[in-house]
Length: 139
Image (cartoon, rainbow, N blue to C red; front, side):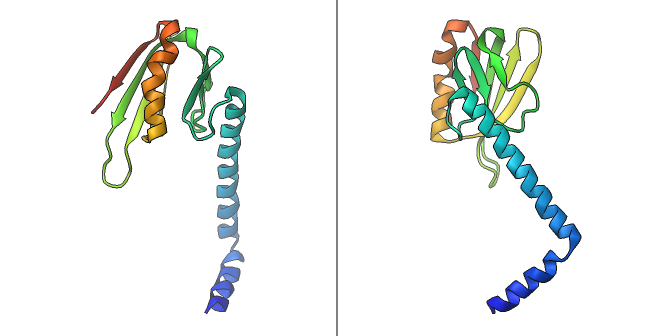
């Protein structure tokens, strides 16, 4: 039975479209992991945390943010955190928006977990020195 499975896999791998798709998805996954690893090394935070505040900077660990992911805290005007409850099986999420003093805004999503709840709750204490307005909105 397993022999038939491996014969089928070998036949499927002869398809150039399927092998290209597998290589392309593998490349994207490695690129995302590499981008996250690089920013985590700079920030010194946890690999699985969505952001980290250290050295007077706000480090965004999310690899899908294609703008600068290191923002000095003295350039941030306001941070808003919106809680988005679970819809069916998607899971609950946070939506964090950073508004800079220059008028630019940056937003990203991250999942709700105990560790992320603690990060959101500590956000006010960690940014108190920089006079950043923090709004945490529960839906």
